[in-house]
Image 1 (cartoon, rainbow, N blue to C red):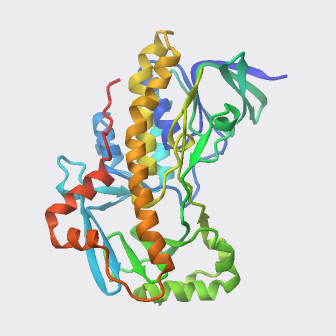
Image 2 (image 1 turned 30 degrees about the vertical axis):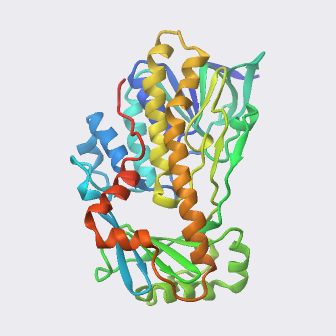
Image 3 (image 1 turned 90 degrees about the vertical axis):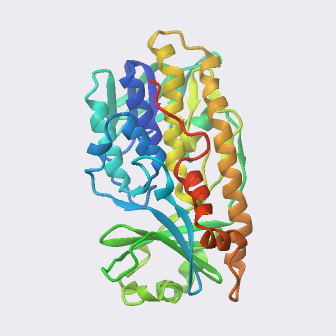
Length: 402
């Protein structure tokens, strides 16, 4: 027999979107329960880029100084190497205020920080090792979710269910929400390599014919993402780990003395890139946010920050109505109306870069000239403020109103 819990809002998914939405709603007086299927947040190669938009949210919450006590690495600029030439792309130091950098921080530290502050609120509950299985329907309205927990079957009845369960969302298809898939020409193989003091001291991309390598400075190691053609992981494995190591060393020669630390494929994690967007983000009693509503390309590393912006918008628009038991379907739909424009613009930019730049690089078999945009950003420092703003703050950034 199932146990039953009740809440004003049940959030499925303890990632950045779900935890932040839960924290902000609970902070505004809403009774919230968040379900997270894992026992902890320790999963590697997740989005670790905390952009200025999220840092500004921490500042608005009065938590920025405490947040920056966590281990992190600041990046004030982004650049790309094409052949032997470096091109400066974005200058985050040009952004106003204290939050003029990207903080690279393990996502588990970020999530633990948010969870710790949320748990201090009496109306916030976080249920770990609790997996949502299905929606509970009452006619055409969703009234909660059924779940499994360490104690057995569980039902959570709620005025609103927020699906923040990622690009592989179980709740979105259960709610019969259609998705438009825009495709992606690439996947990404993530791995770590040791970092030396003599290495470059900034995050950058290395671009050579047929290969793109993203390198994120994590202090003691590089977090590397090797961009490969869509569906190319099997061919990569067929060629063998030694060939993969050789390709990394050829693209970035200063790594040649440490690629041997990649002993086998268990050290390499594949990100299957998706870019999609739900046509409708809500049903009566349900709202999708973050990757459950719109899976983003890794271009620009903006996915985690857009998900958090969704959470801020949801809290701003819904907290008072939930708290007062006056939530309408139009209130829930207003979140999509608020957030869809920034998502559409960002995805269009990502798709343009994927289809025009990434595809060309992966198909190239001989040296090529840098795209005009890169040459202009490098030649005219003032222009670097534009990508810094788009990447760092995004389109129409949200501010805390609750």
